[in-house]
Amino acid sequence: MILNTHCNYTPIPEDEMRSLSDQFCPQAHDAPITAADYDSYSQTVATADALGVVNIRRVGTTTSQTIRMKGAVQGSINILQGGEMIAIGDESGSIGVFDTINGQQHFYEERHGRAGTSRAFRGVAINRQGSRLASISQDNILRVWDLQKKERLFQWKNFSGSSIHFDARGERILAITSDGQPNLIDLWRNQNLYLDRLKTPCQHACFTTDGTGIIAAGYSGFYLLEIATGRLIAGFATKGGQIVDIATSPDGRFLATVTTRSVHKFALPSLQFVESYKHHTPNPSNSAYWDNAGVWIGGSDGMMHAKGSFTGVPPVSSAKAFGQHKISIHDTSIAIWKDFSRVNYFDIGAPIDSAVVNRDGNLVVVKPQNQPILVLQSPSGKKHMQAPPESSNSERVHIGGTTVAIELPKGGCYWWQLSKGKAFQLAWPRALSVSNGGELIALVTPKGNIRILNTINGQPALPSPQPLSNASVKLVSFVNRSPTLIVLDTEGVLSYYDLGTSLNTKEPAKGYDLLEINADIDQIWGLSHQDKSYAVLRIPQADSCTLLWVPLNSEENPFDIPNLHPKASVDPSSGAIFEPSKSAAFVEKDFGGQEMIVYRSLPNGEWISFDGKSIRDSSPNANQFI
Image 1: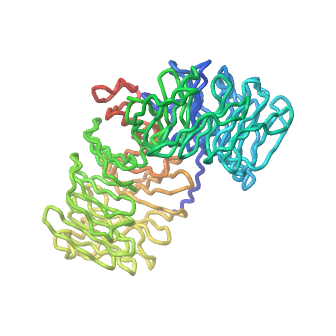
Image 2: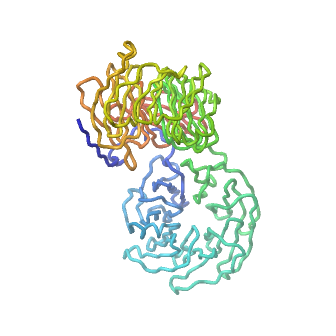
């Protein structure tokens, strides 16, 4: 049987089907916040992220509007005074003006390929009359459009920075030149107005609320200029941190400078210091605004942070499960779940590529980025052991019972039988799998054959299975709670061996071909579910994956589940599918790919799990964030 598998990721629009993951969702973004704006007249807030998702809402309401751009939005959003429209520019060179209520386009222009990426937008502005749109781009060009005629009006070179603004009358544009100086352009006269030259370059500039002054800020300080005379009135040098953004209070009486660690407040126009405090925002970006609740700053956790607010949780990058035991990866942290409860959440201090949990749920093997493999006790997170330095950047890690095995980057493997205090190293294996009980390890030889050893003594546990063809074995996997080994060779042929007979007779196990697969496979699982055994194969696509289910011993036909997260995984015990989901969550899906249960980590150490009918479990104060 030959199976050709091709899949393109075409998710169902949110307005056509509300996902289970959208419930009890405390945040709109699953990527770092990269832009934010606030309109004090309508109390409308807009935030954007590195995936191009723009969320618009009014303070005090629970409903919001989402606009999806083609590229990341880096500082380039601006809400029209009154909150009716928003201007957005993205990294792909697309720019538009949209209705904040229904997302309808009032104006849209895009470029493709290099023509688009060369004009990646760094700032956009819409005048208060809603008739002009201005932008600055990576190509150092300042552009102005007539929104009624939908045509370009002006274009000037040698502008940079990360901000652009119209004055109250829409007659002047405040931007920053390529040498870091604020520049005020009179649109009617098509000329630059005089401003004193700053002592140090700036990246951010804005009008004071009363329209009489200009605030300009660079990495090392900020300045106040008077528009009527162009004079530099005052300046202030910062200490202890670079300025990443500035914001003025809604009443115009105060200025806030946001550094990588702190917020510093000053009175206007005197620039007299008022207060400083730590903002605890992870990796803050050019995305600060000031509303009636104070200064808010966008972080890499996809959330906005204010003084005395919460600690957010990074998005889930991968999730694994074995029966009632589940783990999820959140950047440098791991969440440990048992059944429907989160029993621990801890930080290992380094970004994590992946992790696996054993059948008993008492050990977790962690693969940090560019660091040696760690074995942790679960659920405490206490370090049990650390693998040698050469385990860094290992291809795959495996765990079964108390046996941990690592496929080394340059070939060969380590394995440890932790309960017996045994350690082994072999230079020749090209791939391996550990039985879920941990007693057996299957190794692929340099010639592509299979050897099955006892993990305690390293000796052959049974005769080597008979090769099925001249093709080398590429991947192997034991079937959970079954004496069966699944193999995939370099020609795409999927087969399996019944090891039970070999264990009893001590004769080499015979294999059986299942099907030939004309697709790349990056991982396989073996599972037993309701008296049936399956091989599950993951077929990667550009931004998704397909899981192919192949029955081992029944007349049932193979079937696939497309359009899954690229790191979707399968529980070898139940066959449930686990994949990352929005807002620091992961979701459990059934054989048909339907969402069954969502497991979500919430800010400030809270958590919740729920299905389509009820909350399965939650932490005591979870309701503060849902």
